[in-house]
Image 1 (cartoon, rainbow, N blue to C red):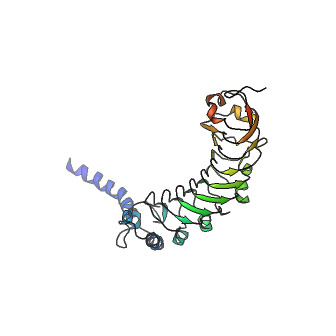
Image 2: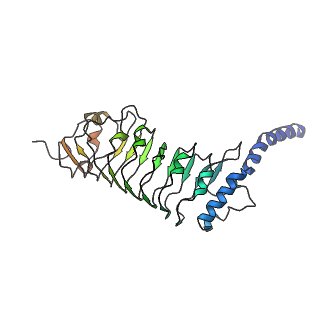
Image 3: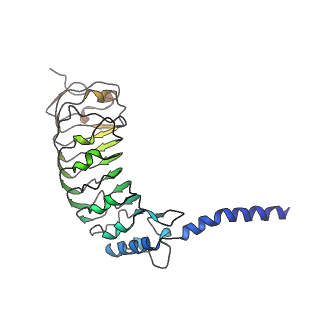
Length: 275
């Protein structure tokens, strides 16, 4: 009987050996870039595992492609780092996910981030970033919440293939109506606490949109009738300049008055009746 166990063990070892090998492999250029990032961030203690003697694929906050050893994900989250965004990030050309949220990063958002060819997920929320949003930042899942960004959205956003966009709590202005469009793939749009100003009346709601949170802006016009038929997970248009009757539907009735209050002349349930 023991002789039957050894072949099984050897077979399992054969299958898992490539996994262990890939875990230890690390692209040299990516490793150099990461060490440069660590230096630019003043060598925070939480990145103590980032050393030249170990594989970068084993470091905290790093994921690698198991075959190539290229870095695909970089997460440096809530480490209270005060620095600009390092240029060495531009060398991580296989990066798919970048999360630098809840630090104290300052200065502008560098355009090179949007030029990373594989990047589909970007979180820069909860920092102190300033200036305008680069036109290159047409990234599928984009979160810039809680910074000090100013100016209008770049025209390139009109043709971008966004899934989730979260721009809350900045100082952004101007038109954001071009983020809408019936054939767009947008699932969630958060614009709260800015100074966006555009007419909501004739925007086409994307077919897959189920989160629309645009309160505390200067948005005017009326709420499109089509919102009544959408199964909303979140919906808030309060503190704007909207007018006219609130479209009545099964799903809009789920939201209380606070989601519609403090507009210019909205009316109908769940707020005051239309006259």
